[in-house]
Image (cartoon, rainbow, N blue to C red):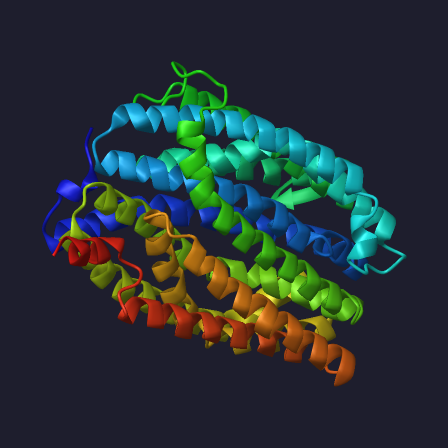
Length: 466
């Protein structure tokens, strides 16, 4: 089994890093582009439509991040197996990922469908748009099993060094989503394109059409990635028994559980954060939703590099290569910080025109621009945290990020926002200031972790041996 760790020069390692990172970046860019298109198309229906879609976005993060956390357990095991050149173990882990997908997909389908009527109420959504928000949420989560497959199987493939396949599947999902949006959101209408006038058919379903488009796209994507994984030449689970094997599941769950708790607690924090913002009114909700959408594009370099950092640190740990572990960190961090400086500057100077794509309301545009320019300054600090966290996840240390993120989310963002909005009667700008303080705390904590060497288990093992 080939492993990128056999590439020894700095230039070769940089090429390995970029080869792993760019497909993930492109995949996330496509997802963000579609999110931009979705938000812009729904935004054309009015502020209430944007608020109805955005009101449950953080619940989407809660569900998606909890499933992604389960995938981290398999990522760590498979990456270590590749580093140790143990193909049999990697395939067994892939088989257990199929079992976990089936269980997780069914459980979340029951939960999301059963709670779809209550979630908008819990999120303090305006009563006038609660029925629409509930319909949107229900339709989006009916295909929960294929959505789970897309997340977990994509992680399995990336752990094996195959980041191109999840990228291609992501492109398929996004293309289908965009096409169906045009057909389902708007009524039949006359369209002029490049001087050609034609009649574009449409279902005129509005927000419900946007949800249906996403649901159908995720269904196709889940089926596609399952088929690809089943036929994969190195990591296919087709010869494995799809039933619980605790020798595989136990260490995966041991790694996944703290990350799952972290993501659950963090995403629950996002839900609480959004709930407090929803209570500020439609303008704040719309500005917050649009700003989140715009900002997500500028995190792409960070999270693309995090995937590569997790995979390669897992490989290095599996191979017990301490020098490679140190070299990885020394190479990842300056690349990441440089990318996020550029990303932050771009966000600062393009904030107003980007927000203007999604809303015609000057009040929404002004508010969204202000909070985006505020957060742009913190991008490089957040980028550092992302990479150190990726290195920790790759070696299976999910407890440290769990503690750090819990402190930042609940100790700074939620408590701070609650005080600012409920007692000081401040608005969205104060809430986003609390979010920036959260990011800066994470930077300080992960910096301390890096400088003290706690991120590198091989350094500890070598001291024990001595």
